[in-house]
Amino acid sequence: MNWLFIFLHPASIRKYLSLALLFSGLVLAGPGVAEATKRAVIFIGPDVTFYESLSQRDRIKIEVEGYRAFGYEVEIKKATQAEIVAMIIEGETDRISFFGHGHGTDNPQATSTMMSLSATHWRSLVRLELFEKYQAEGLSVADAIDRATAETQNFGFEGMRNHSCSSLVDTTLADLFVKPGGTYSGVPGLYVACPTPYMLFSDVSFFLDDYVVPLPAPANNLITPAALCSRLGPADGCIPGSENCVPCPGDNPSVWYDPTRWQVQPAE
Image (cartoon, helix red, strand yellow):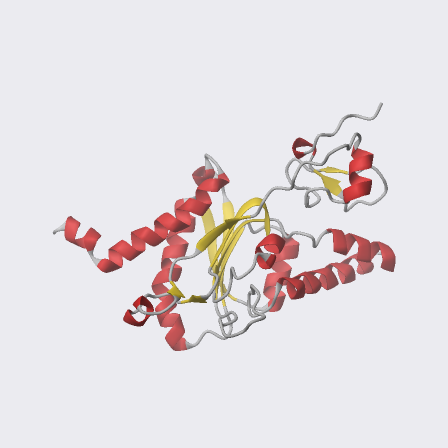
C-alpha cells in the first residue's frame, strides 16, 4: 500500500492540517494534558439540516479525534438552551465546541453567537437560573442576585471552538465563556465546515482563527486584599473554587480573587 499517497490525498491533508490547528489551542493547556482526565462536549445546533450535517460529519470526527488525542473524554450532544445552561452551572466541562449557524455578513449589527444567542443573552439565562437556585436554597433576593451576578462574569472554560458564521466578529462570547489565558476559536465572517470549489472564489473561512482571552492588567497601588476586592470585586474573573483563587475578605461568598496575579501585600 502506498502510504505516501494516502497521506498526500486531499482528504488526508485536510484532516491532518485541521488536527494540527486544533492541537495548537490544546497545547496551551500545558504539559501532561494527555494523562489528565478532562471533559469536552461538542454541541450540534438544532437548526442544522440533514444536508449540512453531512458536510459537518468529517469535521466533527476530526474534532473528536483532536480532543481524545489530548486526553479528553468527548461527548456529542444536540444543543439546547437548557442543556448548555445546566452544563455551565455544573462546571464539570473543560472545553466545548459548537457546530451551527451564526449571523451573516449582511447583518451590520452582527455579534458572536452560539445558537444565534449573544453573550448578553447567555449571561442572562445562566444568571436567572443561578438566582432561582440560590433563592430556593434560602438566600434573600438581594443576596441571590449578587451571587448570581458575580458568578456570571466569566464561565471559566479552558477553551471554546465555535464553528459558525461571525463567531469571532467580536470577542464578547469569548470573553464570557473562556477564562483569561484560554483560547477561543472562530471566524470573523462566513464559515463552512467542508471546503468546496465555491469557497475558493468567495470570502468564506474553513479554518478557525484563535483568540487568546487576555489576562487582566496588574492593578496599581493596591496594598491589601481588602483594598483590591473593594475596588474591583472579583478582581480577575475568579470563579469560586477555581485553582489559585481565594475568597475576598468580607461576608460575600461569591467574590474571589487570584493573589498570584496581583501585587497584594499582607495587611499590617
